Image (tube, rainbow, N blue to C red; front, side, top):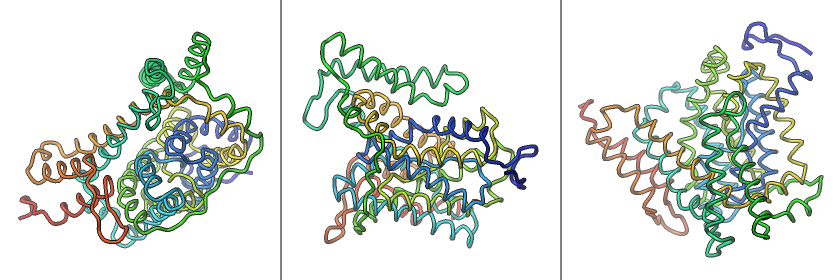
Length: 424
């Protein structure tokens, strides 16, 4: 079946064939490491994450009329908030809050239709978004260090020296692949790091006579298994905690769409329009939350793969989505992921969470010399200390605003009420 669309680059047929299926499988491979890492770190079901990534991508394609070659999957920006919210309100309330975060994107998409795309950047300039993203990454630092040293709560699951060795192998392999890798290898550093750490755990086990891999998780898993979907609950405190977290990914959505536009030489900001891509992202995230999966976001890894392969046909992402849905029902995949030693994931987390903070720094860098102005320094410093210091605000009843959520709200309010000398 072939059909030409205006949005498809010249000379590219929009068709669903075997060739597109093979490339679609490769796109899922590129996204797989990051896709399953988020649920592994937050305690969600990786199989549900696979399913909601596939469903979310299909929803996005329907909303945007199959015009944008992107793949949607687990968002790293929500890792820290999910971990906190699950501990505070439980998993059902957390997933309900995540669904509401997706609906915030929907509201923003309609606001863009009314006020234009510039209103969001005026409401949330780099001086607010940058430090909030930094807080998201840096607040996870203790989690990464504990996992890398083999500490689960108060329990040391393996000797610290062994744990650090596995973490170092995984971290080093990920770093070197990201820096020195060529072709497809450069965009799958997480997978390389996990494999290297896994092999190191096997070798260490053979050398010490101990087993550091949960082989039982793979043996006990069935080949066919329905993902552990979660019925959401809607808790006001959890919802109001999660909504400010969605601000930064909403801003990042603009950058992601601009990136894929630059790759394909098509202006997706105008057609299908940023209001429609935001709507698709929001509906995909809401659907994920309603099913118990992590929020979705457009994947830069896949955009990198599109750049490398020059595979601009959006139908390829349909195949990637279908493969993700099918794999969600293969129980052995979940069992294999559960067998990965915790320090291996900890080593990779050290890099990933630091990179989130660096993204925040890069956003702040857009301010240039203006960052040293008193108003901007006040906003940035307040957001950082509130977010990293763990400040909590009790607003009555069982509603609490804390950490990232409180930092985001504080930055938003300060940006609106503080006088700007340049405009006086």
